[in-house]
Amino acid sequence: MNSISILIVEDDIIEALRLENSLADLGFKVLPVVDNVRDALGLFYSTNPDIVLIDINLKGDRDGIELGSRITSDQKYEKPIIYLTSIQDCQIFQRAKATNPHAYLIKPVDPNSLQHTIELALQQFAGAKYGFSNNSLDNGIIHRESIFVKKGKKMVRLGINDINYIEVESKYCTLFAESEKYLVRISLIDLLNFLPLNNFQRINRNHVVNLIKIKELDLEDMNIPIGKSFLPISPKYKKELIKKLGCLQ
Image 1 (cartoon, helix red, strand yellow):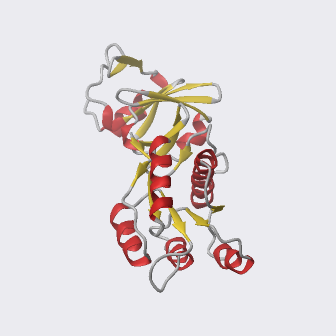
Image 2 (image 1 turned 90 degrees about the horizontal axis):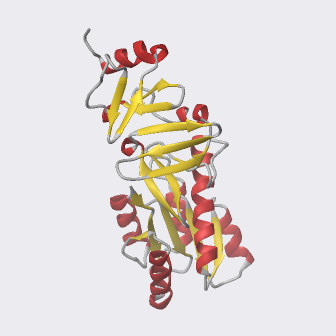
Image 3 (image 1 turned 30 degrees about the vertical axis):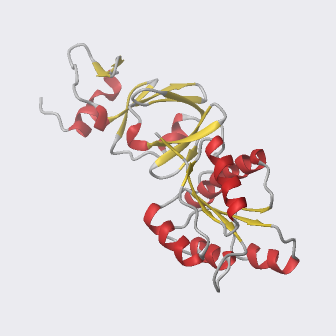
């Protein structure tokens, strides 16, 4: 489980410090602040942040809108961006809008508004990129390799491979990791559509197991011990489970 990582591109030292402190207090992982397009691109590609906050006016001969355009047009490394500016100018707004940002905030930014904007930007980005219409903060924001889940008032990144198993109850799924569990409002069918099918297998009506977490299999008592739990294997799913695990009988 990791905090959501944020890259700040800001040339105003005071504003940069204010953003760093606000984001750290909200539980986000803040990468080193940069103040120009060249350094921002270098850090962006080397750290692969979850989201980028970009001041429109930057040092150098290229502004934040040019940086935003580079990020949103890169299909391989594209990430959601949020523009920050203290200038309310229609022409600048239209240029920024053309780069498809996920938000445009006027400085100084209120911490609560910043948190909500970041969460909504991640939600919209994942929904648009992966075509998951049920993506929401309550559902857990699903990406290909991770799910952003709510933990109190914060959001954290839960890697798909860090899920031990999933417990299903009605329209809710509980994701069990090594030491924590997370409740998300989503049906199992929708969730399975975005999990790697080769790694996850349903073993009974209420449980789906991450196959890479299985260290032993009790075919006599028909259960799988994972952590402190013993998950029952239904005869209906036994054959497919054994096939995926490649067991010899």
